[in-house]
Length: 156
Image 1 (tube, rainbow, N blue to C red):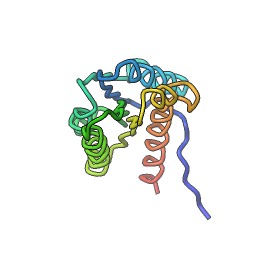
Image 2 (spheres, rainbow, N blue to C red; image 1 turned 90 degrees about the vertical axis):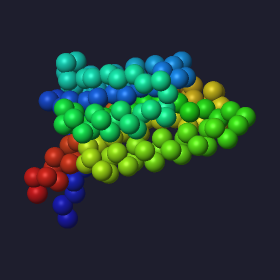
Image 3 (cartoon, rainbow, N blue to C red; image 1 turned 135 degrees about the vertical axis):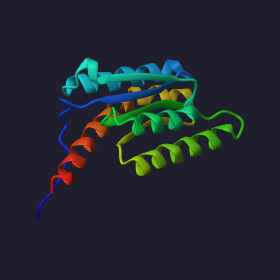
Image 4 (spheres, rainbow, N blue to C red; image 1 turned 45 degrees about the vertical axis):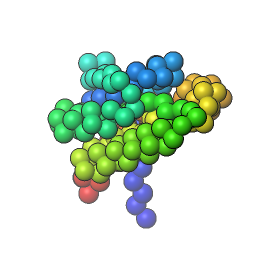
């Protein structure tokens, strides 16, 4: 049986990172994790593009534009949607998730999902570098792996 698994080697790859400024206390830590991962896995500094957007809602549109540009092998989306006392959380979390998935499927470019959707600030903090690791790092790893998997599939 032939098994294809993505390698965690980012050398020679170009990445865009889309980061929400809303909840920046959390998103900056996600960004730090993603950049740490990309650098550790060999991505060159000049191969990284950072785009800051107002909030999570705006992430899918910018990710789509970046994917369409052909200038990036993958896009890493980073944001934090924290539940409040209104249904706003449900709308934003659902649409951002759908939007990012749609961009990935339509473009064929790996779009990594590093959007935290948590019930509390404490849960977000846990996922941005404390107890539950750093989901920004994990999203960047997924992006690297998916680029390598798609390259391997294209060479079959």
